[in-house]
Length: 118
Image (cartoon, rainbow, N blue to C red):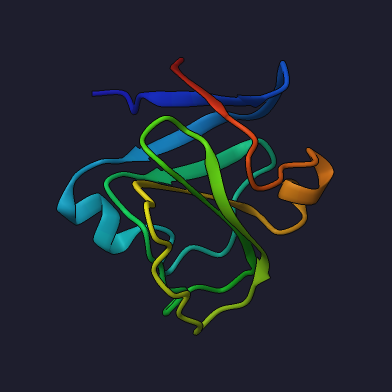
């Protein structure tokens, strides 16, 4: 069975063309643990989720917390391994990207991301 991806865009620009959908307990639990990195254009969407940790990770990530309508509630830039981020009030989804991607695509609080099946 092939892995299905999501496409995440912001203001018409593709942020992630291969975003994994971590929408089960097991997928959310393992997330990006033990991986050595993510290729450019990849991401991980955790749902439901409003708090993350980077235990057992080997690279920095950008963390974008959204509500149920994909409105950005918080952006945490370059979160290193072995950190915990506090829960974000109203958070329903978390998008994890390679470090510096949120800045590259100018993603800020109040923005709305488009998420579609690939």
